[in-house]
Length: 147
Image 1: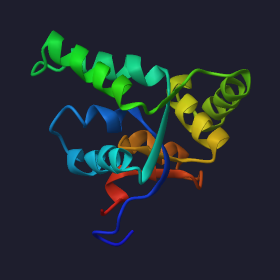
Image 2: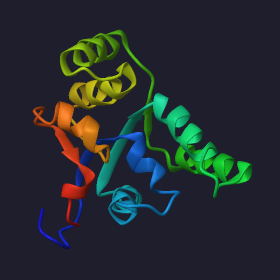
Image 3: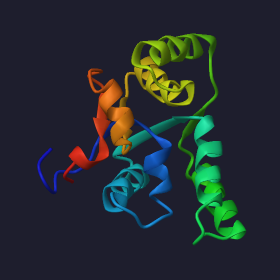
């Protein structure tokens, strides 16, 4: 992707990406491009419902974030209106198969199974997870974007 090219497309975002919307850490600038693209209508974002628990838990254990910050963060995700998708039998069965095939947790496999089902690109910032599943042509690492 060329620098300054407008970000467009359909994405399933890993919890590691959305957490960056609320914490200043490596990759925050790029993660915010997905949020901003969604707000402008250039980007579609879908996530499994599990994302709400994972983000809330990650923020809860960040010593710089208060209880009210955690509540406000999760409420802002819900209020954005991104597609929060509950599991279906098909996606769960796919996640189980992917988990065994790529030796990942079912939690992580659930995200890629959803992306596969929807025909979306899956974005993660977790290098170790990416190394396991990089053979999947719809999986991308956040730091590889240059918008």
